[in-house]
Image 1 (tube, rainbow, N blue to C red):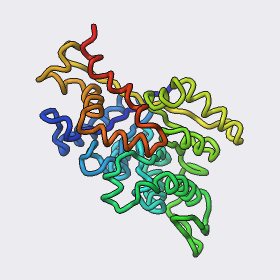
Image 2 (cartoon, rainbow, N blue to C red):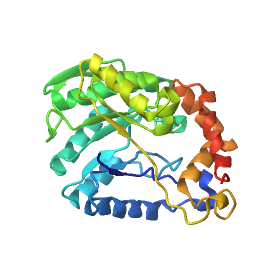
Image 3 (cartoon, rainbow, N blue to C red):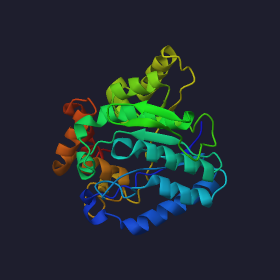
Length: 301
């Protein structure tokens, strides 16, 4: 088993007084990413979140290129690229460049995201997210594996043959992962030969457990002719400086980041956002209700 450093850079408005200064927060994340190599971690995973709506790191390729210049061993990965809100050929160029600058240490991960506000800001129709994502994943891989290629998609066309430069150091391409928050995305990743990343709560909602999610994904991948597809799991570990029974009472409410995330996700002001996210992922909004039990859970003995 291999362990990586993963951060959400979460500091949304819902954190209130516990919200971090994003300038200092990102400097600390950089320090932690560099420390991860010293401590023997396998990889560094940083997110793509825009406008401080949840996280505060919008350009993972830029951040990881800086980490690449200051490290020699650790793998470098986005978790995850919000692909429908990016130009896929530009994404292919950026991560091929990262692979070159890091001498073959890049990992690529992409997802559809969940927040319609990000799509609106970039003038991308939110209801096209699934179709765009599926097409763009194929285009990114094609750009890495073929030279002088053309592409005829619904949203993207490459009419004249072109070659993306630089070429990736890793051949045929860096490892590719898909953030899987719905069964259709799991199925797409499996039949396309991509690897999968599961968040435990999403895996439990879709398949009952992370173990069952991994087993079903691997079975689908084998059936599609990809017996070596891999599964990764993103987990959050937090350190609390107060007693568990105090965490729902001010001033301790934001001492535990994971409880703050769950509280903000379950709070009245954000239920509409999460219901929209659930719907966009093909999950009934009612399926998100179990997370609302986390607020009283903090007071249990």
